[in-house]
Length: 638
Ligand code: WT7
Image (tube, rainbow, N blue to C red):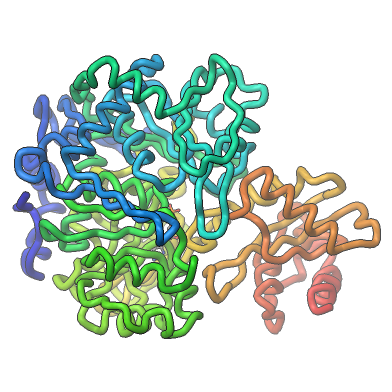
């Protein structure tokens, strides 16, 4: 596979960028020419940011799996598509060639069809990081079912809310998942999520951990039995169903500044072109290379850079079931050596965590296959950047700092490995097609260099969010109403003297904990559900490894003389309502919350206290009860 649209020099980038702004339709049409279409588009782009409505490649028909699988068979059928490394270093790894993956996706597509799944149906996928997760995802896309993958760390309640919002009728899950020393009982969590559920018709359960599971007659079936059934049918081929360019490919739930997660909607053609284009250009992928993205497929990074970007480019993508620090902190480096990984794409939180183990785990590991390193999910601090560059890349691998979001589908601002300049802690330059701008609170664009503002995007790109599932108004309110005719990212940003972009963090009430997005309102809702809790306020604070930690101020009726126990109980409630990832690092019981006369919590003050910086709290005179601030500071110091 060759990529005529791969930018190979700085001049290539500059030229492409210019074209993409001057004539976006011609630019993206020329990229899209390189894909397999069942029917070509009538119009490249139709859009307005007021509704909002964005339609790319309108009138076209295609199937993303035909682009990820079928079109590679003639040239790369025997090449590895997926390399899978188990959680357990002793367990044999698995390699699926493009031929095998193509076969298995159709086999499972048959399972879905046999179980009554139709085009447009929502299928929830709640599995661990095993090849069957990728197979199930692609099988949905093959038949035009909408997948909604839910990260294995979410609780039954969180799943129930998502199933309900998506109106899902089918679930694909596993008996359990291995993660480090843990064994997560996925099916049992699903069973809890389904208590009282009336819409789910079928649960397909894949065997992984062999943990005992309850199988409900008429509802639950085993993956393996269903596959046998397809085998007795003679494994009929499943043609890639024709999808309209703007048919929904998937829904992925993400947190925002309100209490309820929203279902980000991505559609077929634009998402495919965007993930492929960004994959090929940011990482400078060369045919035959091994790409190792350490994310979980439950997040957008896994969707775009484990599955769709790499496979649409005919790449070899490595899926890792485990965690970076188990059985020891040398796991990533062992994998790099074992598979001669060319591209490693991970998160700053993982890098910081591995740094804390010192150089021991790297010693003796052959990292010479590495060509490109990537970072994603949060700002990478300079210390982590230099460690990554020196200890892992041995100063010969460009580091791409990729800024993007669930809503953007793929990388938006990043250097291109070895092609455009890198600068530690800077995402640097926009990709072709991306027109960033900085605005002040009044929505005025801030021009020139050496300025700070809220990051917005002026013009649609192929991978932009199309809607929030079931609630288009919410999409409009969240992203397109803060500033007229702009997509608002929620991030603060600096543009330096040279015009390079540096993301400074969220400007809304969204936290980034270990690269996971968590809305403070969501955590507050969960805490408030705990018996005896009257009110709570959640803020972030700087955390050495996680980037941000969660600090909860809680007003509780009574701790019955045992604060420690009460805190543990609250953590249990949060784990039950959202999942363990949302558990606060700190809980402080307070008699009241600092509020303005209009009843608004002054989070600025709570953030300062959580940071341990009470030297300059700013103006507190507008508070209803300014004395409360000293009381809270006193309690925090105890
Ligand atoms: C938020 C999006 C993008 C996939 C993983 C997270 C932050 C992401 C960077 C980066 C600074 C970053 C932003 C963004 N973020 N990448 N390279 N530098 N900040 O996806 O859960 O949708 O979170 O992550 O704050 O808004 P997400």
